[in-house]
Length: 120
Image (cartoon, rainbow, N blue to C red; front, side, top):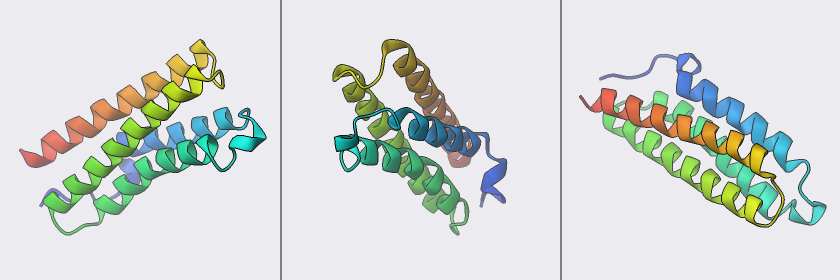
């Protein structure tokens, strides 16, 4: 099985961890009334990406790992959707939005590449 020995050595996990930090910083400027809404949802989705990569890395089969990578990919897409909403309602300016969204696109590419390499 192509099990990952240490998730912390995976570039995609490092990138996802950095994304979580960026999301936490960005959402600190959101209105306080969003703490249980958009702020919480964005933070949880971002953290879910790296968490699923880590959890999947210790599963017993490649199929299981790929399943968790797919969940991470779904969380990444959720972050992108929530970022679009945050920009639409004025919580993120265009420059900040573009920087974070680009980070999400890169994570998606890395997740796809890792999944493809594990399946081949």
